[in-house]
Length: 284
Image 1: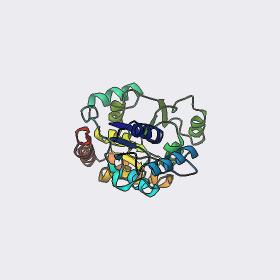
Image 2 (image 1 turned 30 degrees about the vertical axis):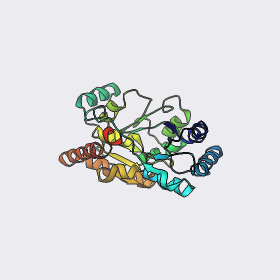
Image 3 (image 1 turned 45 degrees about the vertical axis):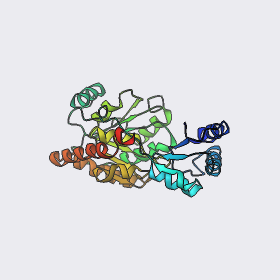
Image 4 (image 1 turned 90 degrees about the vertical axis):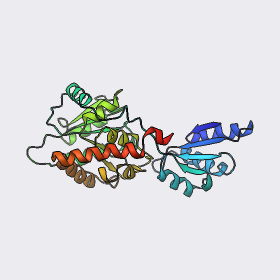
């Protein structure tokens, strides 16, 4: 069996495997939309080349998302070999932990009574950090609101001049904190009250949403890839690139977090959804 991952490997690895007589070639797709204005031409050409050879090279084409299947069917990928196998999550590693929550909050200087928002995602056009910052700029949750926001990921740190300038322009320097990457995502997800994904395009099955939910952290997400499907009724989904809609959803989420029993039920529902539908054994 030869299993390849994403367009370059699917095309080159798949063809080479078939040339040496291996018929069990399995392609992996982890992408959805391929907008000309946002996707390099080489990637779009590779995807179209894969669509052509998909008629003879792969025995199966596995997408991590239903949206990915739909997009690649429309692109010309062989229909009868496309299937969805969602990403799977280790719910022993990603699980609710009060100790992890308190440890991470103490390390970040976040008080226990602060409503902590956060987004885990690298600095990239796809993640659309500006959409989130525009939503946070006028986020009014009342005079006693104590919300703070952590931005986590490669390139999301104090050395990012463009991001720092945007925070200053929007007077968010005391609300939004840039932490860079972390090696302990599970602890971070436990520290958050609400995880946000503000992506504009290209997502398939965003890991950060399921990881947050598995830790009992409800999510607000843009409707990209299968994000809305993952969240279902446990969180909020809004159109991408619409900061007003994102702001309204964040306001609703922060207000909901103030209702103890109802919020606890929502947290439990988020954990249950990942455990029942997206846990690692089911993917295997």
